Length: 325
Image (cartoon, rainbow, N blue to C red):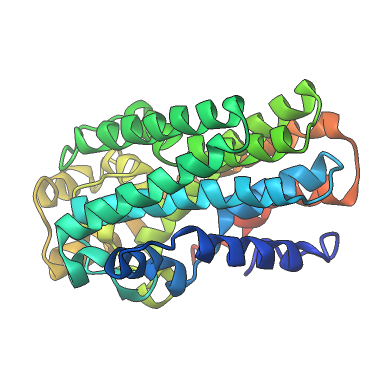
């Protein structure tokens, strides 16, 4: 399901096509190899969720999609891509978006340098949009790093708390989605109240999105995920469904005995089956839906235009795509 295919947004594809062209142009380099590496994941495609949020936020604020708005959308996607290059080095991931990861193809050093290049390009573009956007993007990159560290420090730790988990995803995922929406409002010259409402929406939606993604890591298959299923379990990243399952008396101790080290394939599959046998997934969906509710409520002051309703319903449409059977 494409969350952004909605009858109230008939022109969204055309706006995103402009973003796609600008995104590919933004990673050009005099060094052919660096340019090829930087463009690798762009060529692989992707949902373009963050630039879509920037465009939708601007439309919800009643603005036209200008060249500056396209630049803002490109900047947030470049930050996201740069973080993926770094994440794959940390995780030693072999694939990303259904293709060979940058680190697997060119090595960790090239992946890190290319990730830095993408972040530098994002910062350069943001600077052209003014000091507030530039400062916001720099602050967000810092929040991404804080969230990542918050996750790494609990690696393979089955005592990770729900509070620590929520704090980490607020930084590593929700902060950039919040910024994507805020940039849409700022570049659109929306009122301060509108900008704050869009920012609050993006933060809550980002929380719902990451929880749903973590649920899919337990219930999904590699073909649909674009990455190995159960990857977080293997890498010792114990997410909300795992934390909830560990609290179930009937399987908690046995599951804890499996965790704490890198899992082989049989152990990974056993852990996934154990989690699926409890109500941990359903309970995690409830938490995701609560954040989706908060996202929707944040936009109540923006009116009842079709594009506002579409944006406000995004979190609920996402949660509704989960299949727990």
